[in-house]
Amino acid sequence: MRPDVRRWLQHRTFTAETWAAPDLASVKHTHGSTVSVVLPALDEERTVGTIVATIREALVEGCPLVDEVVVVDSGSGDRTAEVAAAAGARVVSADAVLPRHGSRPGKGEALWKSLHATSGDLLVFVDSDLIGFDPQFVVGLLGPLLTDPTVGYVKALYDRPLTTTDGIVPSGGGRVTELLARPLLNAFWPELAGFVQPLSGEYAGRRELLEQVPFVSGYGVELGLLVDLVALAGLDALAQVDLGTRQHTHQADAALGRMAGQILQTALARRPGGAKPDSELLQFLRTADGLEGVSWDVGVVERPPMRTVRAAGRRRGIRS
Image 1: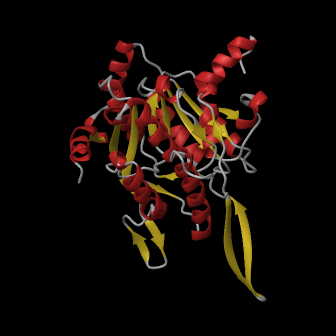
Image 2: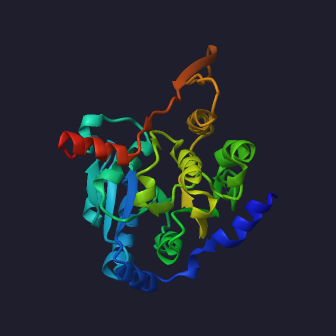
Image 3: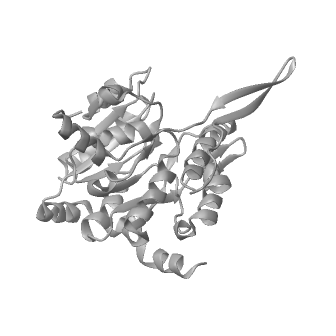
């Protein structure tokens, strides 16, 4: 293991139980900071309401740690927006945010637009498909940010049980991480090799940092943020927190392949001097007539740093 990675692991890896919500709320009040929790959502009516209600009950009403809970809906075809609003979230449509800039599909787009739709000094991002959500997830991610001003971005790490036909594999999730993301980081950005879950959907950061980097519109957003933030702020500004166990829905291998394609596109775009990669991914289905090739576009679009968007809006005399 590289000495810098070993040192980083020792002093920038924490456990969520280190902090209690009332203590962090007191620190937040002293600093005058505000916190926004963001849930990007697409057809998650089954889980989003429970997550929102849990955060509001424990960290808004029960303890003043979180100032706003915002669900950014990416055009759900189910009752995601209604369920989230009924649970107490402020729901915004991704299409309605920054309409002059249009809309792109993908989670990264919702996260980018959330920077414009929220007001917190600190932002916590939580996937909306989590099962058995624990509000300590939010507490743990905020801990390093509220207690150490040199920390600017915090990623979650956890075990991801995978349900299979043979039962539950305690840490069998994260197939794209192990087969693609981790080898990429170790090969090209070895200083980031200490991140246990580089693609985790739960993370938190200071607005002042997040608004200085681009957001990839698709599934490459997490890897892109890691690479861009370490280049901007340095490794010691990044940390990770052990949240224990995280359960969520799992995708089929073909869907994971398309996700991996977007992550690979994001990584290659950050390699200086590299040729522009082909964005087509060819997958195969077996049909009654034999094999059928299906092409997918796994190209990603990078949204510019929100700071530049705000500056351009001020020059035009408009907010969006």
